[in-house]
Length: 106
Ligand SMILES: [Zn+2]
Image 1 (tube, rainbow, N blue to C red):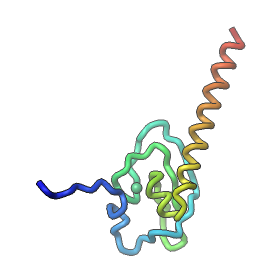
Image 2 (image 1 turned 180 degrees about the horizontal axis):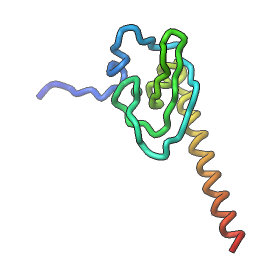
Image 3 (image 1 turned 90 degrees about the vertical axis):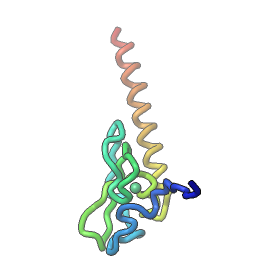
């Protein structure tokens, strides 16, 4: 048992497929699914709650990806993280607003 099982996302799924660009992607959409609902279309591994829709001029269709792949595809991992943080903060603000709203009515 000397074989090390790597759980990297890089090197799986479409990262391997010829003809699929590895960089130069742009995020064209982002959605919080509320829970992990889909599998990243780029690596076929990461369970995705925050879905980054990625588009590329040399690729016919957009791919819905997790933050790890989206960041790598964009060449800016910080951007993908920032989108998720912003989304979480927005959800927290909504929740606070709802609880204030409800208590004010009572
Ligand atoms: Zn992925």
